[in-house]
Length: 320
Image (cartoon, rainbow, N blue to C red; front, top):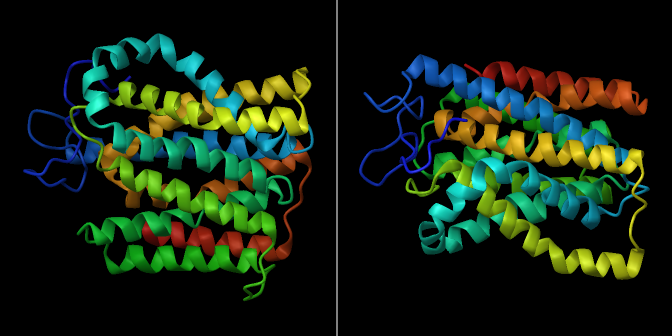
């Protein structure tokens, strides 16, 4: 699946050899620049499209499954789906994982426990289409992290990201420049910040940690972090009813939006970096808007269409 147990990840950064443009094109240890770029973009597209469905399912479950319970069972399902492929690798690398426990805890908090819970909380009062568009702001922060780390982004990519970010801010303001944001919008802004920070952190994953072992360990730690909050939710809100309309979406987000998409995203960042993968992620609002219309019947307003055009324009520029 892209990583081999016991072999160091050739795409990871080290203190002795800075990453190249493709993220994995050093002679003899990875794909060439063009192949690595193409594969990285393809994996980022897969993750983006699959994640688009998770916003729709989160919105569909907002009145039947409490946010924390959604997040908790999502990762329980993800662990069950990933275990046959990754549990043995994680066990073999248990000593390596223990040495980097601080890194794993931070990644698990940002990308597993906090991010998805904030998305589910936002779904209580925000449409799926709006959620997807606000999430498009996260690549701006990813690019900021990379620039701080010394990566040159280029004027065209910077302008493109700023245009897309302007579209997101207009969307949050109801189609006009405003700082009067709704509660759901703010929850999504927090989710976007968590996801961007997680993505930037992935670029610095210790090279000795196998990719599948890292994901399995992060899923375990993130689920453990959610356990106390899940217990409180059960006591205060009660358990949700396990029906096809609740279990089916949770299985989708657990298997596809978690196990599959997180692996694809991790590999994409290793190949092309968080900033370039983030440019692909800008396509998510379009995917979410289309899915929310088909599945939930949520229409897109003229103001939202204008914001979407700004976001797509930013994608075109950022891809250069």
